[in-house]
Length: 93
Image 1 (cartoon, rainbow, N blue to C red):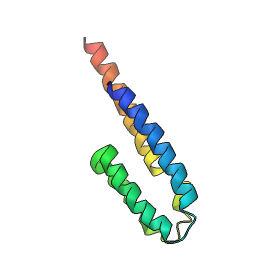
Image 2 (tube, rainbow, N blue to C red):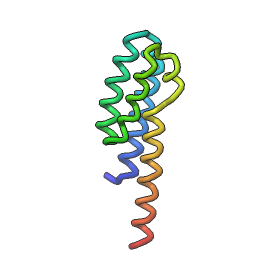
Image 3 (spheres, rainbow, N blue to C red):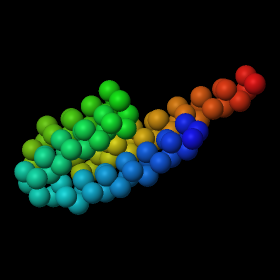
């Protein structure tokens, strides 16, 4: 599977998880627990960069982090990097 295709799949998963965070995160307390689960998912998908998701646990009221689609932003950055790598590899061939 190409890195661009893998990045697109991660983007779809990230959007789904961020939408779930927006909905589930409205429940005070449970939203923070869900942010911990999302941090684990972020690390699994993006490596050490996924730890950025952990900053959403700082807001224990879960009111602010619902507006920041952290995993989606990480996935978009990875997609951009994958496209650049593929373009560079294509140009060198």
